[in-house]
Image (cartoon, rainbow, N blue to C red; front, top):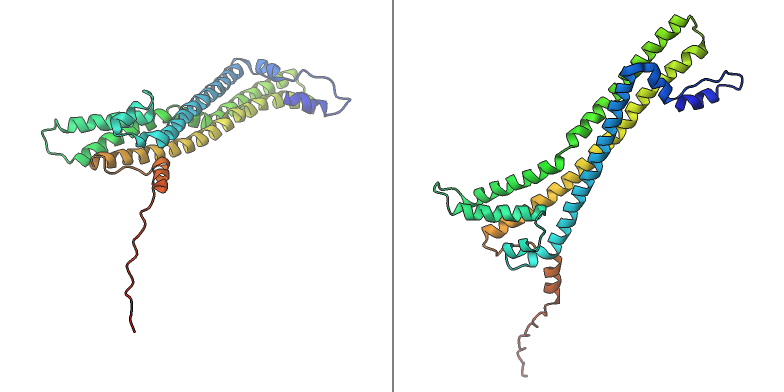
Length: 261
């Protein structure tokens, strides 16, 4: 495609040539076809990982909004967990915390309750973050290797083109530029695959970091609630609004002493 445009602008007197991607792959042989299939497969799986991870991340972000809106207005953690979806990441943290609290009563070796609960919540966060990070290593691998795979296809294509030109005994610019230009298409394809993978990796990592911070804050709030037997809980927008609407008792003024002449 690119070489067709370049060949069209070379001049009206130039002889027509059949330069396109399929012709370049056929000239490159089995190696060029295998390289192209690998790059296209990388692109397909990269896009698949991108869309699935965006869906998973957005799902957890929406769950966080519902938690901030209604969870802490419940009477206790079990009532709050009942309001959350069964596949919610925040409910997993609450369920793991309640399970750790029940298991602590069965321990025979003396362990600080804070350390036991903190360790359980940390494992729960790590499990969620590990699920969110799944597939990102593939994006990083594609971003680093796709240009070199495309370059390999270009080298093979140029090598085969030069052998063919040498066998024909024609070394003019017209006979060399076409096959070499077609071979360079593989490098362009490698870049087309690598750049979106790198951008998607960085963007998804940034969103994962934001989600991890939200989960860590929620986990710390749950730990504070359990450690204080429910006396410590975060201030939500609804509770703050209720406190603002609560009437303030007027302050009684002290009687002033009267002075007589």
